[in-house]
Length: 270
Image (cartoon, rainbow, N blue to C red):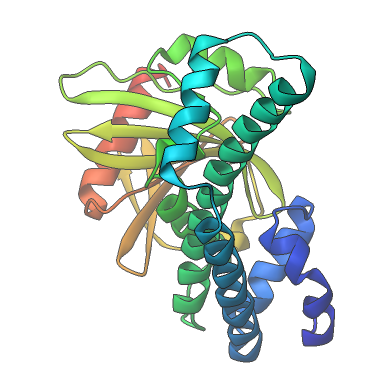
């Protein structure tokens, strides 16, 4: 992708309307082009100003309270002229909430892009770290919030095009928060969010990629080879099994993530 091409993709990129391949091409270009990162920063700033102006034009508090009282008294969908107005107002408030969440995600993405530089790091590692920073901050970014591993496993199996198993962790202080469908490179990926002793760990499960797309130091633990890299202070550890990759990202140190990976391997009986 060249700079002239990127300008045609900016709106769709920020609106999350690109295909996985197009999204990857845009991210890869901006990782190494300061001019295009500046353009995206300007677009993010403009959008934030527009959104802020829209939020300032929201209904006053007394009107909002009156509408909410009307809604609580009549939970069914209203009919008639005034009833339809109330229904539209409720949709308006819901839209504002959704808009605020979208703005937060745009800012998170922009912050990541502006910090990305031409360091010698795999683009896939940088991508996983960037998404970890976006997804792990708020459970609102998850498509399913469930600590039941079997329920999450069943939900993902209906939505990803490859067989996977959700690692089951059962020690004290360990829990699964939820999941979503994501991507790594140009491949579909299952995204899992765990929490261990108050610290969050992102786990990506995706189909194997050529070896030159991921590079890092390696160590063998209990018969499994773990690879590790680091981007922007976040370690990334990944391992391969039966044509699938499992990658973990957190603010833990590399050794802690390797131990976590080993727990995942043992939990799946590998």
